[in-house]
Length: 214
Image (cartoon, rainbow, N blue to C red; front, side, top):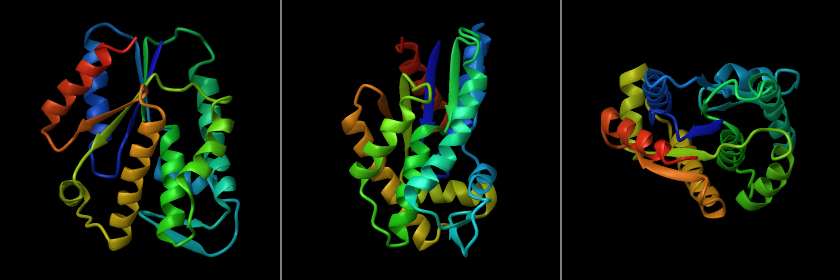
């Protein structure tokens, strides 16, 4: 069973590409599961038990909790997902996650840094990784769809008529840097894909990469 994940900033086209790739592998007779574990509703549900003033973070309003608490709350959803998806070995040939474990750390780090609560990439991720590695199935390959911020914003405008705020841009820049940090630490897992290209070109490149993953 192969496990892959898609990562990238908002508007990069993760869901579109993930859906296209899923359909291509299904056409070839493979058993494929496409799952999106990190959603706006889940972020809100995870922190819904906490009181206090809510801070706007991109499209969500979330209460402040310490970064480690926030990471653990989101991780709880993924652990439950893993129990369901992987409880029967070889149920699927390929499991595709549209956002996954790296999204959690990226979100927490960016949220705290844009709100001037400095959070180190290395210290937070080294703590978080020790916890999640024992609890979830790691991807064999994580594809980061990398796109220019101006192009991503235009796609966001076209899709939902939403322009980026200054905080959006600052947060997305932090996330892009964080993915590069992860790639330096796990070069065999991460693969950056130029998502400034057309959907068709990106889909072909992603499929070519995945066909070489064992």
